[in-house]
Length: 167
Length: 413
Image: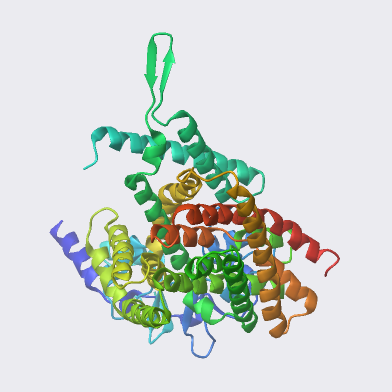
């Protein structure tokens, strides 16, 4: 029991950079100005897409999840009781044409030097399963709950947590 | 201190108000009309029932005397009005939360032109109408202000039905309506404190200071404040801190001599820009849309009954005033926004479509007239006349706009 307690404490103290997926080339990335159909083609295979300003800088500007696409794919129901700036994005009405139109631009992110415990707490508070890892505004990797579960479980089976650097 | 009996009578009234609001709101929604109209009419009906059947009379059935509570008095009580006033704060706070500064920055030239044109001309026409009909300068300014802000909900639904939301006209209207709301709120602040030209300059300085201190500096420190809220590990403590910020901003705006509602709007913009707002926006909407905001709209309808001492003869003058204001509201937006659209490069027919799409008025017009009454700018029969006119204006413009929009899009591709 003591050993397991120590293991989870060590796990919490690790840095995000030690457990994140660093294969940026393999992440679902799309440029802000790319067509909505490209978004749909990626989401056919993935659960989310990170939206970047352009391929050179990889500055993270948004995220698109299946849920974002659901709201533009379903027939638009504009509530009769709404105030302020209305959300009119819809494929049916031609008001969602690019990745930038669909993305959520308030992104919960983490930094490579953050501790795993802080990243986990963000996932809990904001009910998220994945976080982009961002350095100087640019996406440098991704931390998913799936990865964290896999790493922790493998550590409980007497495998070193950091044996596989590539995630 | 409120007595237990009064307290529970007011709670009963709020329950009745919420039920009436939602039932009539739903009926109007089913009729494809704005639910808000149903809620205002709920207030008018409730007020009528209160005045005619529950004014504290005694009904005698043979030997049995039935005493009814004085509902009309309770509807005008400060406790009931407090809930309605909080409803206004929530309405503006939610509007602020939904306003994206980055989207406003990207607003195209056409929307800005349309918004400015659609504020200036209705303001002038409304002011002149009031002044010509014998209202004072400040009262006329309020009349002008009521005509400035567009309610875009009706237009968006109509453009969606016509499948033309993705046109230049659609995007111009959407952008223009957001900007004219912001201009309307700022101008209202001027109107509430204005007494002379020097006052106007002084209020302008105070608005600028308020925006600088509470918006600019707020943007710098809000994240740290919200982090503290997050660290209070109690249920919904983050929401509590957010609501405290809303109320504090309203308080400080009022203390600064500008309207408390501008504080609520600024607090909304400020928190809406923060990434943590994702956590509370649904909770805030649940409290606002589910409780306080319907009470505000019901109270607008109810307040029509608060001044029942109008002479029958004056209704002729009021009718002329109503017809004049509705005409000016339509002409002001069609011509004002139309000129703005034309100057930004849209064609004649597109400019007309934009102008017609900007006709509907609703929540901000009602907020402006309510704020002017509660600040004592509009009193007595003048308050009644302008309130009645505003309610009819909101209903008429919301009802006719879809027909006019459809007419301008007929045979247009």
